[in-house]
Every structure is written in structure tokens, then in C-alpha cells.
Image (cartoon, rainbow, N blue to C red; front, side, top):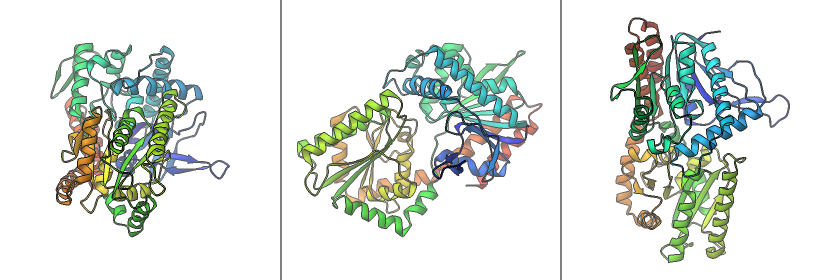
Length: 493
């Protein structure tokens, strides 16, 4: 039944199934910036969220949860293996992250990707109201925009790409490169994290499809003749800044931060890395640099400790299993060579923590190390900055993370340059309080002014403009629907 004026389509629903107590289990809200950004809009626009419940072979009817209408899309174990673990995470993920690991191209994975994308598109088409707005999220669903446009030409369709989009020389490796581009161009607005990503996409469109591309948009042939315009533009995502500020102000979390430093032996400097366990994050490079600083005598384990939080990720994928083994062997070697009875060089934790504990870690850390080899944005960098209500601390940030475009006052590094990273870490350790304050105030100003509400509002504003320009004779209802969503996003700010 077509009822929702605003529909989000994402690989996952914004809830998790809690079955700890046995029985049928219950739903609980998922953490994450995307849920935080879109939940207020959906509540006020009678929105629906289409997504996978998170476990294979589970089928649920649509249901309401905390003011949102949720539409589960069932995936079999074979779907998860081929569409998600296979094509999404063993083909697209490494290809789009500069081939840091070798992508694998398997036809049966591509067939599963097409099949599952169609299932998501059909679910969205069924729930979207006449003239409604659908916002598709991320690389798992790149074919959905065109499929949805073919099914429901009355809809206004947005797509946001949360990961990098590769340079043409890499993208051209993909056997199904034209089909993916055509899938994305089904959207009225295609959003990217960085200007460079939008440029890479436009170049791929020119080379592969020969469409005209301008700053004002890409001319896409329309069925039956004529053209419509698809806008490809950067909309850098952010965080719910106020949430992190409120947590950082809580006395219990500040006390927990002091307790963490005490547990570490009260070193002069606490360095922190927080990442999913992924080969794109540069964890190995970070450990190598820190280990060499100790070996060189430039840093001592009595004075500095590196805390590395690596949350579990894709544990059934062989390359991730190998990565975990390599990282843990490296940590064990460095600690074995340099630990004292009272101090460890590296405190390593392969687990995820709730947001409250993460903010305590941010408050405890003098230096945040973000050493990604390639990253769409890296919200951890922004979370650290938002949490530093004392205007102290140093952010060491890879130039290959999308956040580097915005956080200009961070200490920038090339993570492939180990000597340069070592020098940057020493510089951060020795940085005077006045310089820390000057840099951190600038970083915090940027993060506060451009938070997640600003991100969703700017995208939906662009989508409202696209709705008016692409079909001026019929767009009144559609434009109103998108404009309402944009307005509600602004009210939620």
C-alpha cells in the first residue's frame, strides 16, 4: 500500500533484533549517525524505512517502531553471502577504496546484487505515496535508483554514496561499470562525501556513457525522448554534535575518563585509535609508526600509551581474518619487546563500546590518530573534536579521509609515509597548550556549524530543487513532499 511521502532505503533497518532473552526477541534502536540524522524527519513526515533486519532467513511483516514505519526486506543466507559479503564487500568495497585489497569479480555475485537490489526497489515502490520522495543509501544499493524510476516515474529519488567513488582508471576495471552508472543516474540527486568523488563519478559517466556533464548536472536521456537532469554533488556527512557535547559534559563520563587514564598507569600522553577492523583504516601503518618511535627512543612506554579500539567487522571474510591476525601479532610483538611491569605500549581491544564509553575515551585521549588509507568521511575524527569541550587535544588526520577536506586545523599526514607520521605524532605530543587550543577551537567551530542536521537539510533542499526543475508541469505535489521533508529536517536541528 502506497502511504509514505518520505521513504529511506538502506541495507539495514534502523533497529536491531535483540534475542538475548530467548523467545521471539524485541527490537531496539540501532546506534549510528544515519539513524540519528533521518529519524526526526521520518517521524514528522510519516516516513517509512526499507531495509534488511540484519539476520538471514527471517521474514517480518511491516511494523511501526518509535514513530517510524519499518518495511523489512528478507535475505536468505545465500543472498547475504553473494550480494552482501560477495559483491558489496569483496567487489565494490575494495575497488572503491583504491584497490588497497584486490577486488574479486564473480558473475554469480553480480546476479545476486541485481536480484536483491530489485527486491529493495520493489519494497520502496510499494510503500511510497504518489509523488513521494525516496532517499537511497550507499553502495549496496547502487542499482535501486534506476529500478525505482522505471517502476515509479512519479517519484523524486535521491541517492547518497557514503564511501569513496574511485578514479576512472580503477572504476573502469568493473565488468558491470555501465550498469552501475546507469543505476545511480536513476536518481535526481547523487550525493558524495567529497568534491573529488563527485568529479570521479562525472568523469566515469562521460567516458562510459558519453552523457553531457556540467556543474549544473548530468543530462540523462529520458524514456520516450528528451532529457532530465541528475545532479552529482558533494554533501559531506557529519554527526549529531550536540549529543557528543552533552555526553562530554556529564560528570560520570568525565570521571570515567579519569579512571581510564588511571588504569593505563597515568602516562603523560594517551594516544587513541578507534576503527572498524578494516584494511582501509591504516591500523597497521599506525602501529608500525608507534612501534618505531619506541624503538628509536623518541617515545617511552612510561610516558605514552596507544589505545587501539578495533571493532569486529566482516569476520567471515578471509581477508579480514588475516588482517586481525596480523594486527594482533604486531601488537603482541611491540608489547613483548617494550612493556614494563607498570606500563603497556599498546592497549588493544577487539570489541565495540557504547557511545558513553567512547566519549570517555575521547576525553581521556590527548591525541586522536586517524590514519585511514582511504575513507569516505571518517566520523570518528568529528566525534573526537565534538567531545573535546576543554578545547584541548590534537587530531592527527590522514589526508585520504574525507574529513580532511573540512578539518583543516588538524595535523595532516600521509599514512603511507611512516617517517612523516612519526614526526607528526611527536609534534602532537610536544604541541603547546596554546596551539592545541587554537586548533581545536577552529575544528569545533566547523563541526558545530556543519552537523548532521545541516547535512540532511542541504541534501533535501537540493532534492526539492531537482523535483521542480525536472518536471515543472507535474512537480507541484512532488516538490511539496520533498520541501516538507527538508523543512522538517531544519526544524529538527
